[in-house]
Length: 226
Image 1 (cartoon, rainbow, N blue to C red):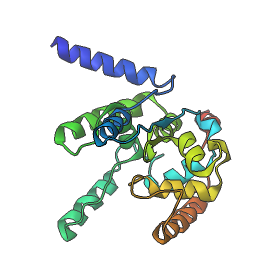
Image 2 (image 1 turned 90 degrees about the vertical axis):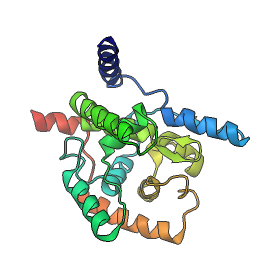
Image 3 (image 1 turned 45 degrees about the horizontal axis):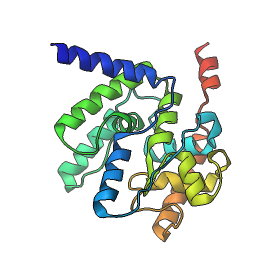
Image 4 (image 1 turned 60 degrees about the vertical axis):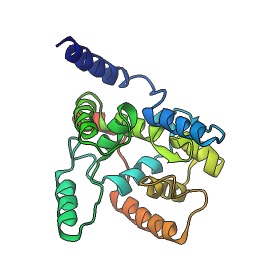
């Protein structure tokens, strides 16, 4: 009983704390460092937290467009996408991801990368927590600062400097679209040296960005609520 109380208490406290303070690191960062040491290669860990207001507004728009277009409308889980993924697996034997930005943020910040049911269960729990305590802008802010964006590169500021030689706030629309299309597999797809396939995906992402318009700011959300 006391173990459960300690777990629920500490997890809720951590989620509330991360509503206000930057997330310093993630389990994946430690795992990647361990893998580098084990492989006998030089350690590489680039991670610099920047507020959402200091990230080009094109990047949250690009990620929203490519990763989870229902992000602003769902409560952490896109039921339609889950049903479609299950249908494709049944009909074609094709496994397609249906994780939302909220789920990916919960996994990145609190959990480890695996496909076990135990980890999935914890992912559901933490997704519910962050959707309850954080607004969508905070979820996007944490996502953009913790997501793996290349080999040893985590977050918008790090990838902007490493791949494009600029700060996150100065990323162009095309650069943001290129970063966004790599996120399903950033260790395979390098935004600094794109392939012809990546350029095709970038054009698709730019079309979606034009359709969606812009990602709402905190001020716009506050005005809407008023």
